[in-house]
Image (cartoon, rainbow, N blue to C red):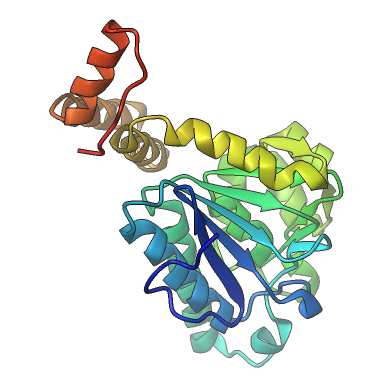
Amino acid sequence: MSTAAGSGQFENIRYEKKKQIAYITVSRPKVLNALNMATMEELRRAFTLVKDDDDVRVAILTGEGEKAFIAGADINEISSLDAIEGKEFASRGQSVLDLIENCGKPVIACVNGFALGGGCEVSMACTMRLASENAKLGQPEVKLGIVPGYGGTQRLARLVGKGLANQILLTGDMITAQEAHRIGLVNEVVAQAELISRAEAIAQKMIANGPLAIQYCLEAVNKGMEMTLQEGLFLEASLFGVCCATGDKNEGTKAFLEKRAPQFGGK
């Protein structure tokens, strides 16, 4: 793997690129990869690179080591916040997760161990979540007398439904990878040793498809979730029309009729 040109030096994460996949690893193992604001700003820089680098087609996000994906936010930072600072803290974090969700590229979260609080919220901003068999997920903020601030109350309900989201949020309990899979919070549960290789296999399937089609699928799903069905259908039809004017559509349909693999150019 190689560090992407222009990525600069990161202190709290690693950013590497190989075969059109960006690998972003939160690397603070002494604190179970907990998120402080400095780490959040590095994630913003990393996913700006993902968004702007045409050679990157998929990102894989994980945490250093086998114990934790991201164990949560930095409680030391939160403990001293007043109301104004707390709202700004949450808004800044939400903007980073919005970038992850809407960078125009699929982002696969490899949840290895604890994904709690801000860590669970980061995973939910990703396109899909793979969990190791030892993974534990949850939103324990109520145990600290606060609510989730990085989108947990919103994305969790959209992923698993209001009733289950309330149970997870109001008890603050951790759930196992197997339970998270049962309720739809994670896509698959795999052995820890196979977590990255499984993500890479899924990524390669995505890379083989039209990059503009991938981008527009993500936009249709993400934006459509906030719309009525009729509004979402209108968005889908509009994006379908945009696709019809691309070279990728011409290449994809021609390749299908000629019974060969397409060579997409992303244009």
